[in-house]
Image (cartoon, rainbow over all chains, first blue to last red; front, side, top):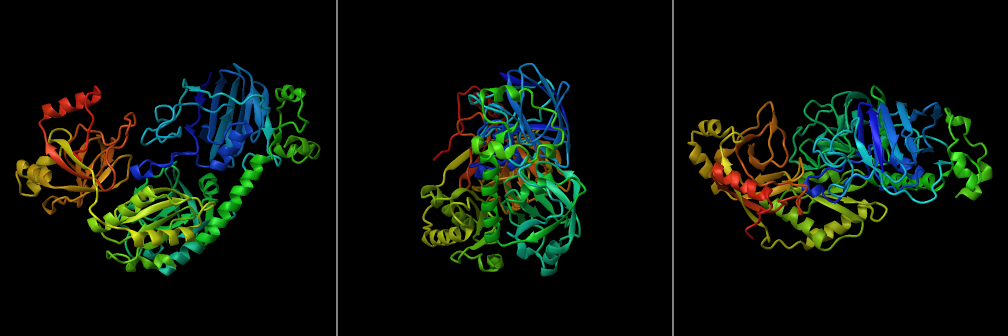
Length: 354
Length: 250
């Protein structure tokens, strides 16, 4: 059974948790730009977190279900419609075989995720389904999806119900543009004079339109490297802030190549990288330098928090689990404002819905 | 702060510098220069982690002079990993490398080797002399990076060192044999490149459909064997038909 793509926004691709274990052969990770948001989408549909989902920017597109399925959109608020029904982001909904789901404009975020129960079952390439556009790996022929593509669906678990997080939200955390993006200095921090490092701490940087799945170019005061802008090429991780001779910092993202020859002034911490990816173009940001130990602590705490969000999903209606519940899933809809259901009716169901 | 340790690490025998690369990776930097000795230490450490894995280490990327080590801080904190790696480095035995050797067939010149004649002129050589220099050299794969399977080669004769083009060409095919600065390359995917190109190999350094998708690994040695255009086409057809696989000579 498959999901047929009738139309897409500017960028729609198959993604998962990325390719790992082959970086020594030059294979980039790829995978979701906002992995917690994609994990939430998968969990809402009852999928393993390793399942593949769809990532989009700006506008989702329209999709025809080849079989009955549950579908969830996460990443940000989004206008979702099945015929006349208006559905909310951040929870799963039932879609009947043959129905068309229209996923419109993503609000307040850059990357949205569409998961369906059973996952997108395109073949694995080099250990993952994630699409890497430049090297044409994974997904459908390694390219962005287009109208007419038929995506194979995996087997869904038996008896799944529609779910939402206990604190309804389309992202498992706030984007919070005012919060600084935390970084660990280095690996080439000593290529930069102390006053340039001070700039990194205090200056505001702006997210330019020069951004894609490989990198985000930031606008701000130039960051000249006293020891020059060429290093002997070394390994790169996503989150690395490399500074070419223009002095304009560039944060490397999911599709970044595995090695490079520019000095890297600092590395965005893992816990903050999804938030950076989601900041809208034109947004201002500040960096805050933390130690590696602190960054590790923050990451472990963030993982525990995300685990808690996924472990405490509740039925999307707030009703007790019952055979009637499955039926009610089909009637769920009309939640345009998530705050309309925020926290209400839940005390009754949490004990029984874990 | 270990990032101030750059200047201490550089000479063989010195302790490497450990550089934090965020919260889930660190770099073990054995020096600042591009030389076989430094690269041998990088690869020896990578091999040691393959042969005797450390719990919590996810993967390693050997590069010219440093090893990027990815880890899961839930299982192993960076500080503890540094201590474990320092111990490993102290125990490294740099005997004779058991390197694989490749003899890579190359059709010099032609459509892909579009710079052969210009480059020969620039170097005041005949094209044949340039080919002889290039195919007599023994190259070392310093690292695989930039693209899947792309091999950075050290050992380019000094007479052939050539700066990159100021403006990259838009599409250089997979299999192109290149020169960039002091390095050689075997291009593994079609794409833009500012390197100069003198030939083409029918071998594919990266073929996702092959049982072993990547031909080369850091530490391999290779040399180039000139073949005619007809032989190149034959090899390509034989590989496509599944009758032949590129193989190391040892």
